[in-house]
Length: 250
Length: 254
Image (cartoon, each protein chain N blue to C red):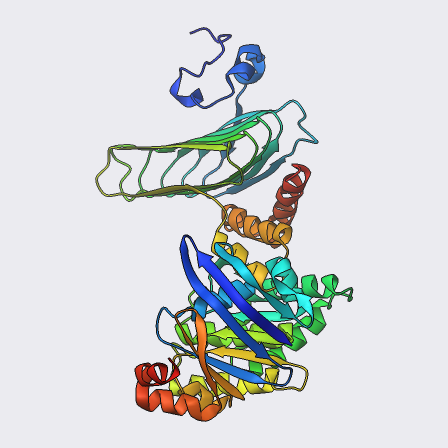
């Protein structure tokens, strides 16, 4: 479903990704863990097409299409969702307006009819309920005045409404308290656990993986995947730290 | 100065104006002041959309307003066009009166659009609030000159002024000149000014959710200019002003 091959990417003059190869099949959840500065967030931004992140070589195909050839909004319309580590505040634009524009732009790009106001609100209410986010929050401006946890839950509501095929979630668990972590974990499972969907979870901690069970765990260090294993790899990382695992991989 | 003399850009109140326009202007038009009197306790609201379709040769609107005790004068205006446009409001406030101003300039090409306000807090307890937003592209210029005068016995004055500009392209300009002349000692006068570009992070966030660049820009500009109409408490009028402004933006070939 998502196939990354020998990806090299730079930010400014610095090479951050140095030959990253990774494949996620439909129906799978993969976790990427790794020390600070390994390139985890860079990977998510490169996949999302963020300006300033330049791919120097390698390829990424998404459902057989060249992802790197698409503009960011086209990637979204193809069904790629990027969960932000730091969701952006947009003063003056309500969540409802933002998400309705987004959903209908995606539908238009796919040749589908726009969703009516009533149908959209029904969908939004359902997904907000899933993440236990008050519908009133969706009437407020995008992320303005939201707590860290509310921003992350709101991201998952966005994911629920947009219904992507593939989600790259960059530290969606950071800033969440224990209850919110469970709610977000359950939300990810309900929205993305399906035979035709895939998830790449970028995280620092094993905790989220208690709720969203990964099929594979990858260790990203110095711009490449240095080790891949099952869910037990995350547990070992938690107890042994990166140093031991990476020494073993070297 | 005789009444027929034309102002020049050497004068402070005209320093950012369109010099070419001033040379050829009709003195009668330039020196024509409309007057509005707001009786004590009453409210007068003016909503104006100066759009190029109605004003192909530009806009020269100067109005002198006197607001009686406890009265309220509200003025909301969008100034968009291809030529020189100037809306000038001089307001004198009596005890407890209020002046509300919301203005938006939208311009491209080599147009010059400007709001000039002179708010005279002549008596105690009066309040004023001004929110001006400028969206400029091409080689256009958007100006706001705002002067607030607080007389010696105008205690408990509360005056606010906020100007922000977004320059969509290199070559566009915004000028602002807040002037606060305060002779009373128990007053609140706040002013802020900022000139910048559309928020890149917000644009990318929108793109990441599937919103194409032209719609993202429209949403961000709508949110930006919406500030100027926030105090217009008639939703229908507010929506209409936003629609006019966005249509002017679209027509500006941006």
